[in-house]
Length: 408
Image (cartoon, rainbow, N blue to C red; front, side, top):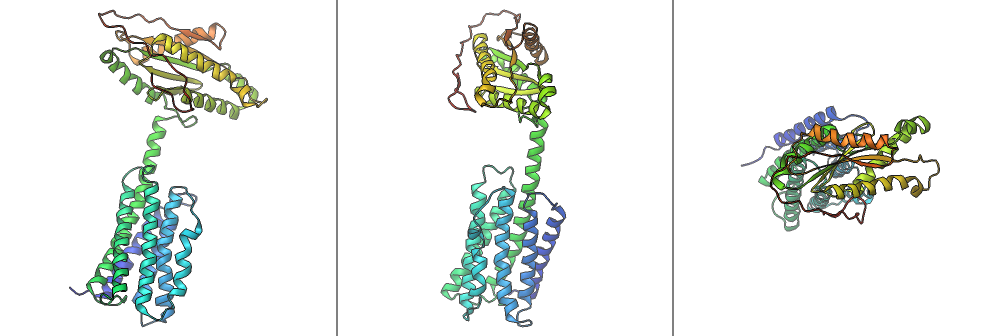
């Protein structure tokens, strides 16, 4: 089958400029999604094929030198877009050196050599795209990245084939040649523009969706799970507690005299105090433990498979850590912050719903406040006794490094 070159040119031009219009409509100033770079790249790709279609009509420096320069710039801008999306930096030398050399190399008299140079530079840039995508694959939400990967692989494959063809003298590779290879090249060019552009748009949407899901279930200030999420976690643990025949401990804690901190030092200092407390909680808890901010200065800690003595030991560790925080920081202007903690331990035979369990821990917290603050109180919970093996108490060992703790 023989390709009709003007039609193939028109197809690539229409696809590129249409996708550029779509990404431009989605782009907003100040956003760091890479859509700005991507839109310019698509527009340059369409312009490149407009220049190719004018071969032998306008001067060669436009259809050869400028066209090759624009083509190589397209892939460089794709890399810039992905780096912006991932909020990363890379040496400009790695990105732009192909653009710097393609102009002078396009002056070569031998057309086959020019084709080989452009194909090799394009292979490098497609491989660079894959490196950027692969390096961030685990941190990228969703499947949009795989559209971009497939497009980059297709571009790499066709350009490698053109490079081998040029090196071995395999047929007519001139841009206006009506050969099967040229037809495949133009088809792949159009498909690559569609796949990669749709992939980036999908990546943007998926990241926004992931952020919205996170904000719906997490407190924006501290990054901890919010009340809704914490209640869901507690409900699951209470439902599985009887099957596992293991105790479940809860802690309700809040910052003592938090209003005084806000009034004396300002709300920014109050916000920092909440963030510092959240950091201490994250650092001192095990992987299976859960901590959430219920609202204001109140926090809920859920401790699976933890007895009353183990929960009290952890509570004392947290209380001392917060009490020593101001002196350890060396900041004389930092407020002296303390916390009060209410502990409630539920045995396997306890019959309480989540709200009732939290109320027990909250009542213990209220007692701690009434008895002078900066202390720990334990709630008494009545249980329905049934024959069962005594749960094994899991001692707690303070974690060796912040952010993690050994499981009991």
